[in-house]
Every structure is written in structure tokens, then in C-alpha cells.
Length: 229
Image (cartoon, rainbow, N blue to C red; front, top):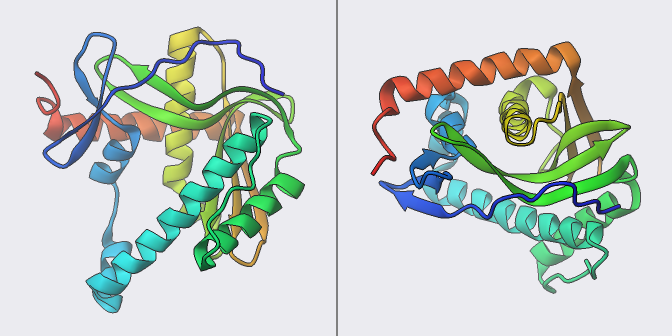
């Protein structure tokens, strides 16, 4: 399954003014994809939720989700690399992560035909950088593949930023390696072990690419000089 067609760079991460940057090939600092999306997105819904539940409860929810998500991602990466993936803590979150990862391994990864890279660094000099979960062939198409855990399966219209992130990575890969990736797969498993596949390609992919370009423009209108040394 692993087919190393490309040499992906090891990105150097830098935290500056509480913002995540990466160094591009010219040693400039460029914002991460998630930094751009966060700076240009609508946070009204999540801000209202934080006010409703309170900062302590909100932080606990975020930390729990992060712990589960990190463990599941590591397990999937190990599985796709042909390594032992069943390494979890014995506490509640570890057991939950194990169940979710097992659902991925047993039922949700079968359409991945080739893996070109896992946790692969991608960068467009002077613009942005980030790390893609998985790059390869999905259902016969070159695809950016992202693995998501969720408390409950989300509606497609709630997760636009996932597709914008995927289009950012696809376009960076196309620039770096002269590929033609126009497919994004979001594979999501929730805590009830329900699985949902979101696949965008062709005209829908182009639509997200155009929206991503607008987000870049919006970011640099107010952040143009940040991240440069």
C-alpha cells in the first residue's frame, strides 16, 4: 500500500505571537493552513457555545477531543505503515480511541489503494504550509485524505473548512510536484462508531479551491507583514 513517489519536506514549525508558522524553502515564515482558516473564519457559533457552557467545560471538551483524535491518528498511521497500531492507554479515553481506530481499520480504509505519504509536509513558498494526514490513491483517484473523529457525525455544510484545508493541501502538492490532485476524502467516525465518507472532486473541488484562494487573500490583507523576518 505504501508507495513513496515523492520526497516530502520536514517542516520546521515556529510559534510566534501565539500563531503557528512554518519555514518555507527560503527560510521565510509562512502561516499554517489552519492559521489562515482560523483567522478568516466565522467563530460566532463556537464562541456562543463557549459562553453557554463556560470556559472550563469548553476547555475540557476540547482537550478530550484532542486526546482521542491524536491517538486515533497515530493508530491509523501505524496501521497504514504496516506497524502495530493497537497501542492505547487503559483509561476511558484510550479505550474510546481504540474502538474508533478499530472501526477505521476494520471498515473505513479499504478504498485507499495507495499511500504516497502520511503526515506529509506541503508548502507554497511565501504563502502557506501544512501537514496532510494522508496523500495517495482513493477510489482510483489521486486524493488528499483526512481522518476525522467526532462526538457526532457532522453535516457536510458544517465542515466547509475541512474541504478548504484539503484543497489547500491538494493545490500545494500540485505546485510542488506537478501533480493533478482534484479529490478530497474526509473519513469520519464518531463516538457511536458511525462512519461517514465525504468525497469532493471535479467541479466541487474547484469551487472549494476558489474559496480557499479568497481566504488566503483575506488573510494577507490584514496579516501581510506578519511571519517575516
